Structures are given as C-alpha cells and as structure tokens.
Amino acid sequence: MSKVTTMKDAIAHLVRNGDSVAIEGFTHLICFAAGHEIIRQRKRDLTLCRLTPDLIYDQIIAAGCAKKLVFSYLGNPGVGSLHAVRRAVEKGIPAPLEVEEYSHFGMVGRLIAGAAKLPFYPVRTFAGSDLPSANPRIKQVPDPYAESQVYVVPPLNPDVAILQVQRADEQGNAHIWGLMGMQAEAAFAAQRVIIVAEEIVDEAVIRADPNRTVIPGLIVDAVVREPYGAHPSYSQGYYDRDTQFYLAWDAISRDHQALLAWLDEWVYGLSGRADYVEKMGAEVWDALQPGEAWSGQVNYGQYR
Amino acid sequence: MTDHTASEMMIATSARELADARVVFVGIGLPNIACNLAQRTVAPQLELVYEAGVYGAQPSRLPLSIGDPCLVTGARSVVSMSQLFQYYLQGGLIDVGFLGAAQIDRYGNLNTTVIGPYQGPKVRLPGSGGACEIALLARKVLIIARLSRRTFVERLDFTTSPGHLSGGDSRSRLGDYGQGPTAVITDMGIFRFGDKTREMVLTSLHPGCSIEAVQEQVGWPLRVADDLAETEPPTPDQLRIMREELDPTGRYRK
Image (cartoon, rainbow over all chains, first blue to last red; front, side):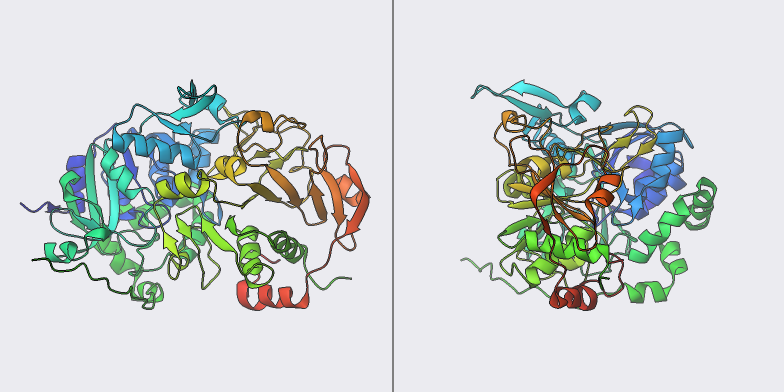
C-alpha cells in the first residue's frame, strides 16, 4: 500500500503536542515546508532537535510551538545570530526556552547511538571544555580497556524525524545525493519518519541505483511529495540555497513583531507549500535553478 | 600607507600559514577565503574539508555557508557527518583546523557559547558547532580574530574550545589530542605559543602597527618576542586572486 499522503495529514497524524521532533538536514535538505505546517497547525510544547537549528527552528520557536531545543550550533550560517532563539533564551519571548547543548560531534554521537540502539556513545571530544559542566547529560566513564576516562553522550531517539529527500518511491525508499548530514541516522533513530520528496518515482528508479538509497521504506511512515519543500534551504541539483533569503532573515527576525508579520504572510496566510511556491514567483525559482553537472554512470551488472 | 585592507592582510597571512599543510578543516568567513587562496598559491596540495561532509572540495564560488551546494559538485568525496567526524576528524586526518571566537584568553582558549553566566546569559552566542572537537583533534589549530579588548580578555566567560588551558603542560595532560593552537592571526599582528608557558607572544607586527596599539586592544600585559618581525604584506598575486576570483564583492575583504 502506498504511504503517500499530504503534508497536512502527515503533520496532523504523526506530530503530536509534546513530541520531540527532528527536522534534520545539515544546510542541505532542511524541510521548511514541514516546519511551516507545524506552525500552521499550532503544535505546542515540542522539543526540537537539530545540530543547527537554522531559520526553520527560529521560525517555529518564534511561533510559540516549542518548549525545548536540543542543538550544537545556534546561528544563521554565514550571516549571524538566530534572533528569535536568542530572544527566547535571553528574554523569554514569546516563552522561555529550555536548551540542551552539545558540540556537533556530541549530537552526531547521540544520533548514531539512537539509530543503533546503543546505551551511550563514546566521543573523544569535550576534554578541557566547559560544555560537560553546562550539560550534565555529557558524562565521563572509565575506559574498560585502558587506565583513562572517556566522554559519553546519551542516545537521541526523537518521536518524529522529518527528512527532505530528492526522490523516493511510494514506500519511502529514498535517494539522497549531495550533503547527507545526519539524515539516515535521524531516520533510523526516530519512532516515526516522514519523508518529503521533491519527486515521487517508480520503484524501478530506486532499484536501479541502490547505493543511493539512504533511507529504506521499511522505517518510513508517510511520504509527501513537496517540490521546493526545502526552500530557502536547497536540494542538490534541483534548486540552489537562497542566500538572499538567509541574509534578509537577519533583518526580519531582529524584531518579534516583524517576524510575526512575516509568519502571517508566508505561513498562516497560505494553505501549504504549493501556495508558497506560487507566491514566491517564477523569478525566484528561475534564479535558483542550477546548471547541469551529471554524475557518470556505473555498471551494477546483470547476473544470471 | 598600505594599499590593502586589514582583512586582506589577515587572509594572506593565514594562507601562508598553510604552506606545509595537506588537509585543512575549513571554517566559514575569513578562513574560507584563506584556505581557497592557499590552495591557489602556496599550497596546491591542500585538501579542503568542510564539516558538512565534504573532502577535497573545489568550490566554484565563495560559499556563504559551509553547507553550500558548490562544495559538493566536483569534490573528491562526500560523506555523512557520522563519517566526517569519526573517520576524518577523530581518525586523525586533519592537519590544520581554523577557529575564531567571541572571546580568547592568553592561552588560546576560546569562547563561542555565552557572554555572561551560562544560565541567563547576557548574549547567547552560537555555541560549539564542531569547534570543540576541532580544537582537540586537529593536529594544530590556527585562530583568526580581530584585536579588541572585548575579544582578547583576561578571563573567558565560558570555555567552549580548549586551547592550552592554564598553560605549561596542562593541555598535554588532557590526553592524546592534537597540539592545540600554534598561531593567532589578527588584523595588527601574529601571536605564537612558542615557549614553555604556552602563553601568547606577539611575534610579528603588520606594517604600520605598533606594540602600543596592540597592547591597547589586549586585556592582559602583552608579551612581545625579542626578535619581533614585520609581517610580509600580501603580494600583488594574492591580492589579485582575492579581489578578482575569491571575493569580488568584497564581503569578506573589507
């Protein structure tokens, strides 16, 4: 049976108030379309997990949907601060936000442990840093094979992971190319998985290139077709990162009221991503269209 | 008078520091241009590694973020962040890591987490990202920062990424990690950590800068090398590549 559904239904049925949610994707393939639907459906008390909260969690936190943030880098990449997250942490606007902070490698280790169902994960980082004193969940244990201590992090098993991909079949077997971030680990670690694809393709397309299948349909609960679902993040080969938007967000997000006005116009005022794509206009999409750079082909062989 | 900006001086100086490096972990902003400049001048052998999961990048444009699609197209390898952090960084393949910070102390310890107390901070900064593990696991670390009393402080509000801790052998007692910061490249001069104290020593002044002017921007009594040098200015070739190829709009050079 096909798992294809709409974004509205996927978020309504699979994201519950109080859930921990990981909309993963390191710069690449961040599913803003799902984040906007979470805001539109006014989900509450979410624990948001991501290495880099990026603009999507800035928006969700400004909208008042989150109570906690688990992260490792809190910035607008290459631009500056995430002002809405800072307002929540520094001033409690619109509501206080609890934070649980790691380094990137700490978060990487947490997701590996979550995906592999390990009790904890050892990482050779944190020594000499104040991070373990700021976050008591970063612990030291004796190395059972040597006379030394090693830092460990706990597994991260989000209730829901939402992953944008370039293409998937109706079962959610998903091809990703370009930066892979922690997409696979987040999917394997989560209780429920929503795949959001630029394109839904025939199973044969997936089977023709199995090395590119990063997430198997086996662990996927819902598949949503959502072209441009990652904008202003990007989809390698489909559309470029919208640098102008990331720069513009700095000004929009500095003021809470201006940010709410932006949400009114671009999230609450629209019914979904198709509206957003139309409102953004062909000129924007044309400008973000990359040129072509095809991979070579490999021969998997036909065996008798 | 010089015909280059302080940022161009920092970029050119940083690029020279990479002359012997094979694999560099690239940060965003000035380090990004410096690494690309080094690859086109003193270090054609240089492999650029980006924490997003790219080894051997050959970016066709200057990326705004370290996860830009131009880092992928034409790279030698693209891997998950699990592989990047475990096998490349923790596996010991990184020769040089570049770091910046909101606060630096005299031992090259770095703060990118908070100004003020951790609970209820005055300013909430971005946090570690990959900096803490780069500081520990790269063979050596180059710090790039503009001199100011707000940045070069007597005492950090928070140690995000360890440098030489409290100096002496305090870092080597941590365990089997990289050697830590070897140079701090600023807009007025270069500091190194040459002696047993592992304290920052001004070893080179940029043309037109004075020891007094540097001291003015540093929040502790400055130590100056006996053989204080004058930094080589950027060559015409370096300036041409920066201005025409790497940063034509001047976003990072000004």
